[in-house]
Image 1: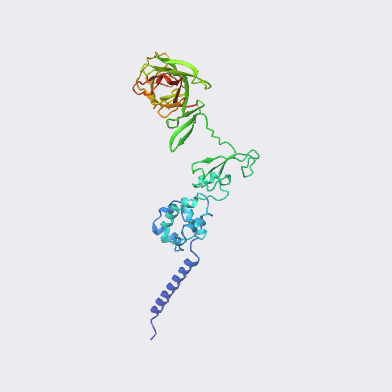
Image 2: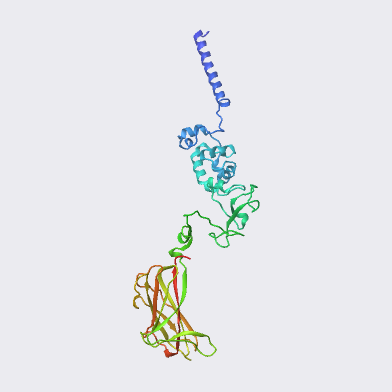
Length: 391
């Protein structure tokens, strides 16, 4: 039985629709597929695009998780220095390092985590400026100028800094044999040049030790780095002390010395004006010898002092803050010399830098135990140590 005409027409219509849909699908697959060599939108949008949009622009490819960081690092050597993350992804694709879209977010995280690992090795020919702009960590492996950083001016524009043609350069490197913090400037001084008003500061473990003050052209020391200076000053006797310039015995050198008695009122004065003094504590070092054939015991002095500024009245002697100097002769022989320092002495009268310091040392009759004090010869020169603020 022949089908009605309208049924035949409707069947042909459905067949036509089916063929058209197949044709459109083939055209989308082979003709209309979008070019993926360029980012589909501006940098920055990619990282914040919804997951669905990311999947649309990044169809299934292959396996970043299998390639791993080493392959990523190798592929990135062809990518421009300082390339934003979004373009690095395309650069990785272009170099054959591709990934599944399901790992897209992980890829960005991996690239971020690899930033230092990838950039820490600078290829030959990379300048320091390029390294800085690229955020690279410069590793100085090995010693010698070939492993250092050259900084300066290429005077003859020949691409190197070999010291010829007006080159003004210095190479610095880390000497591993000396420690990672030692920087060597070979075959030439390491010059530090600061603009006027900008000091050069030297620090140790974060603590300022010294600085070059460009406004005063002085080298100044900070608290932690202040060096100790010493001055030897002549003493002047008081009490029953006698002073003589003679040798201990024939053929020994002539020196000035004091002979004291075992009394607290015996001693000697001395004074000095310390240059660049920081107005801190001082220590006194005394020396003595003996003519006793078998000396025993200790000879003890106690020392203290006052400071005097310009136009101030010179104060009386004081024992406030005195510290002992103990000269031990218990294991000495005849003519032996014994020297000893005091502990830190705080100078009285609120000292300031530039003050005149008056000090005295007197016998401590209680602590002095030498058997023949008249045989003691105390050197008349006292040595005083103090710290300074500069040179």
